[in-house]
Image (tube, rainbow, N blue to C red; front, side, top):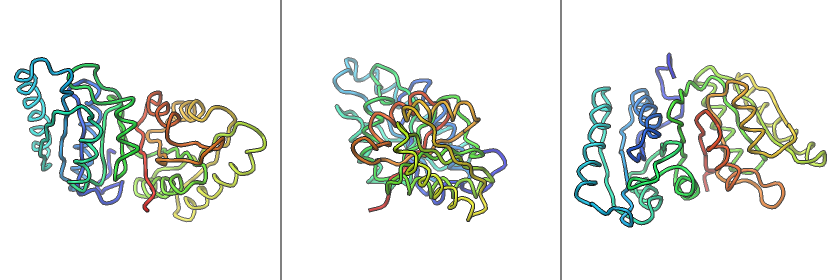
Length: 275
C-alpha cells in the first residue's frame, strides 16, 4: 500500500483485528495499522482464550493482556486509535462475529494461520466460520504479505456474492491504480460459455471505470488454478464472494475458499453481498 494516501477499501471507520499471539498474526497486525492510518479508522483488537485449554488461567490472562497492549502501543505510535478486547470462550468465531456486530465493524482482519494451543484462533475451521457468519467483509493476511492492490484477482461464478466481490475489487483497483484479473475456473467444456460470460461482465465493469482487466477461464479444480494463477502472476490480493452457486457450479465458500486462503501467498478479501 505504499504511495497510497487514501482508503483503498472504501469506508473503513471500524476495523476488528482478531489475533492469537502467534507469529502468524503479524501480517494482519501490520496491515491493520496501515489501513487504519490511511483510512482514519479505529482498531478493536480481539483475542479469545479457549476455556477448554486454559489450564493456568491467571498466567495466560496476564500474558494475553500484555500481548494486546503491545499491539495497542504499536497502533497509537502510528497515530491510530486502538482498543483491546479479551474473551474466554469455547467457540471463538461466535465471539469474534458478535464483537464485529456490536462494534459495527466495516472489516474483520485475521491472520492466515494460528497456533494450536491456548490462544488458538485462525486458520481452518474457526476462520471459515468467521467468514461465513461475519456481518462484514473479512481480510485474511499471511504473515509476510504486503497489500499494494496493484494486481487483483477476482474469482467469479456469476452469483450475487461474487458480483459484490467484483464491484469491490474494481473499486480497489481504481483507487490504487491497479489492474484486474477476472477469473472463473471450469471443470468441462460445457461450462466454458457461462464462465466466459461471467468474466467478460467483470472485465467490462472494470474497463468502464478505467481499470485494466484481463480474463481467464482455465480448466481445473477451482482452488488449485486460483492459487497457481495468483502465485505465478504477482497477485497481491484475491477477492472472493462469501458464497457461490450450489451443486456442481458452486465456486465460493466452503472448501474452495478455505483452500485458497490456506495455499495462497497473498492476502484474500472475502466479500458478502448486501441483503
